[in-house]
Length: 253
Image 1 (cartoon, helix red, strand yellow):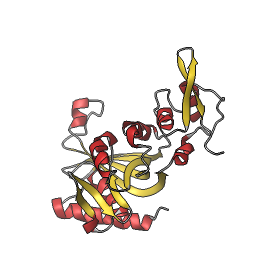
Image 2: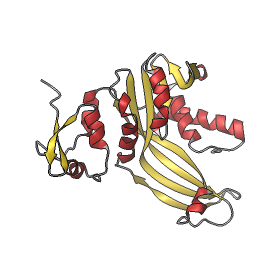
Image 3: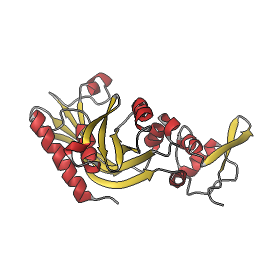
Image 4: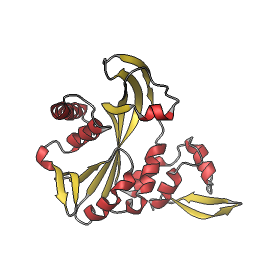
């Protein structure tokens, strides 16, 4: 159950530490987001940055090892191979439930442009990330938490307002992601937890990936079916022309 008072305190601690270290907020991309989640799940300083074998874990507490990874879950592979031998491991992956953007002049502090907060319903990126660590998804010691957050992206620039269609100009921008509110916690620690990602719209008994994608309202390139196949929610049963055919696996009885 989400405790937003606890999350506000965790965010406040992260902001204080950043100010103390650097004199201003947001000196490293996604630093605040990472630190806020780490403080939320393991609030005591002596639980954080603990060495286990050859690696440092973000946190170790009575609930096991915690790794906060804001992107590129595949980079955790070596850590997971080591950590899962020793303990329950929780990987926390933040995904926006709503996103807005501020454009700020770094020199003057002036707010130049703001895009309104918009709801984000898609978990497309989350499935790409889960697919990248699919070899671990069935490990009974692994728990995944998709932390859905209301996020304000703050884009800092120097001089004149940048041409956002220019790639080289965009690379010079400094971006920080500020979490404003903890909206939803999706906990995945067993096959039945992944069943929530089946389409709410009806599927034929045998279906192609394209039919699955249409039923969930995602592109055919979505990796959702492959993640569900990895954890045993659906299975491949044959071919229909050039397309693979799948069916849902009976989970009970």
